[in-house]
Amino acid sequence: MRLLRCWLIGILLAPGTGWAEWLHDQQDIMGTEVTVTVWHDQAAAGKEAIAAVMADMRRIDATYSPYIESSELARLNATAAQQPVPISAEFSYLIERSLHYSRLSGGAFDITFASLGWFYDYRGKKKPDAEQRKNLLPAINYKFLTLDPVRHTLAFAHPNVRIDLGGIAKGYAVDRAVEILRRYGITHASVSAGGDSRLLGDRRGRPWLIGIKNPRQRGADDREVVLTMPLSDVAVSTSGDYERFFIDEKTGERVHHIINPKTGRSADSVISVTILGPQGTDTDALSTTLFVLGVEQGLALLEGLPGFDAVIIDAAGKVHYSPGLQPPSP
Image (cartoon, rainbow, N blue to C red; front, top):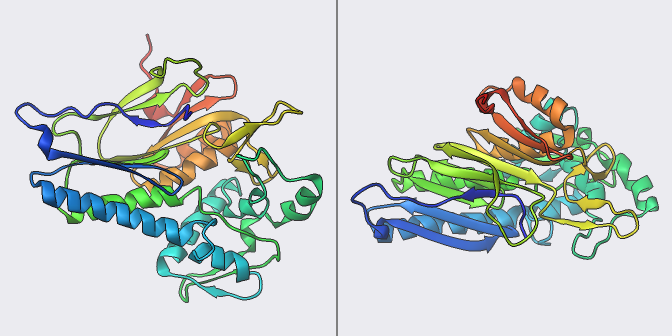
């Protein structure tokens, strides 16, 4: 069960409007639920726009999934340690943005985490053994990535390097979705891909309501939220330790997919991070970054990034806010 995610709570129409003009679709893509909701006064055009978004989501998945052998990313992982590999301009952009956040965070965000992270199996409840950790942890270092942004080539400077764009690709995908919807003349929409969302405009005169759920809520009641925010024209990304994880039966440790690049183990000082900002590419990368950095270092980093805000729930369940989201004093 997904214990924490961004929820689009209700789609309320402005007075005098009809349901026919709100169009909605949901599909399983990129290993998650992709949901698109748009307002359009012509149903056929609105459905065409949604179909275009879904097609682009599938293209991104086919290009950057490390689990699809024919993907551009999988082929890169197979050969980039031997020689520079030509990559698309789009791929080059994603690598450049990833390296930007690696440098900004001192390596807390690092797509080479996959050098060891590839050997975690959350469904099979398996994690790397001691020998794998010894051999592969040294390969986690973004400085081993040699990008030529002009020729669009990428090479690995260590034989065991492997990359994974899971911390940035879905945010990029929702950004692309908004670009597509705008080309169709749509000005009111929401797009989500798992924990990454983009809101285009408002709900025709009312804000979208985004709720952050309690990540440790148990039982049948699935409605408790830590915070509900009225929002419009914003990207929202949530990273949590609840989506892909298992409990180690020997140690009781929660083993999840957000890996601390310095240790090669699941980051454990917080349990969820939600970032608000202008672009999903950035909020996606930052939610992972702050999850690894923890509350104090994460909020300190965010102070130097105007236009971004955060809600962090630490391992003890305490909620922390960036200054722009501080609730009013009682």
